Length: 577
Image (tube, rainbow, N blue to C red; front, side, top):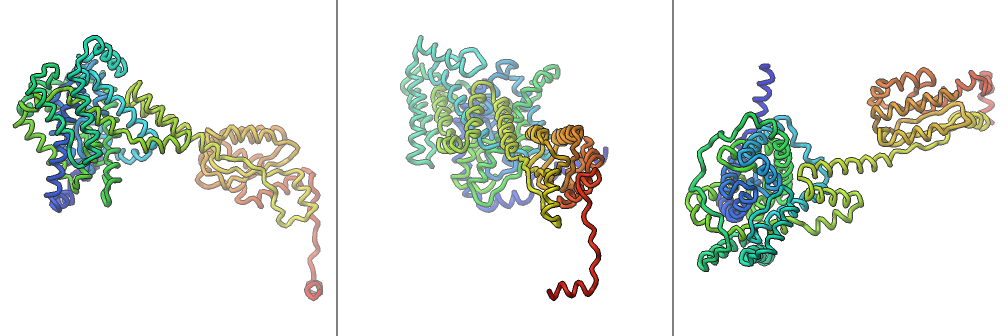
């Protein structure tokens, strides 16, 4: 018990911030301050919008951006990652709010945070590299579609219809708008989205999102447009930390949603950190420490009324592009948002919901990398299938199921491709020291097969069928030096094939079995069967010699001629001749 606690303690110590982090923050603080201010300006409307979309309100989005953003910046594994509420997480939270209410979301966030810390202690971060690129691309495309559709009610200025499926809610919102159109809200949403999209092409470094939101707010206030519904009252500061939302009796029913939230938080945070690494030179995140930081952030955010957080790809990209070099930039981003919460809450409360919907519509559109999708779709049919299937599952089901489906299909297609590489080829016998006549006799009774590639469950049954068709021979030699791997299924199928050949009076011998593959063959009895009925040899020539001895013993081959030893004089005459 004591040793286990010591290991956990040392593991936690390894995940904590170190002196190198402080040294990085001191290197160029002015550049990090500017980058953090820029990211805060970009993050403000996104935090408000995602808070509203989640169902917990704009104040929840701000609390998440401040608390989770600061803690993930300090304890996370990336120098450039910016964390907070995201559209992907919002997609997961909407049905949780509908089923369990706001307190259920807070409890789910707390549980998910604990799960992320556990994953970090178990060193699970490295497994992110096994998620195929088509799954990530399809996942991102599906998220972008869901985020865009979620904004339709606010963009059209209609009350959010009942329902937990985004397609159903969108359709009902369109029906409501057709009955009572609110052209003011629609104009605000379209104008803000258009300014953001066109401005990003014209001057990418200018934060057009905040400029468009300010302009929309000024127009709505000066013109007295009641149709442009504002966010509403916001608290001037963060609430006191509390655990009053925890209901011990409901934790069991919240376990599955918590697993979904933790899975998404891990996936999106590690993906975002990887994107940040790719945009810079010399930066490399620590995946386990990133999970640890996100876990602490998600444990703390619910205490202040915040929603679950993840690393945010869009805000992280802005952070990198504006020259951030350390985690100080993400800390400044959280501090600026905290100042806004305390000092400018009355002003922020007047922002029209339609304007925030326009921000998120533009964000969803910018998430879609058309060139990357086109390249992935043209790569192979399997990649295109995985991409489309993951995107459709994200839209029709939910994000976790979509990733699981994408991974299962990708794994099945990969196994199919690997299984196709496995081959069973008949090969000619090595002539060796045998004469022409003796070699012909050997070839008449012996057939040799070489197994190339993996002998596992996806490919082994083909070998059984091919081996079972062997006829008119007395010995089969299996050359196994090129077998890359064997699993239990492959070993059992091999044993079955050997047994069937033995029943037909055909002896099976093997050569070149690798030492690392003996255990699985031994565990199912295949190795003992080969040794008892036939033989196991280190090399193919030795196996052929063993087959020759067997054929001599059953009278199918004459014994080799006995050569009389030559005298010294005969050898000398032979040499002279």
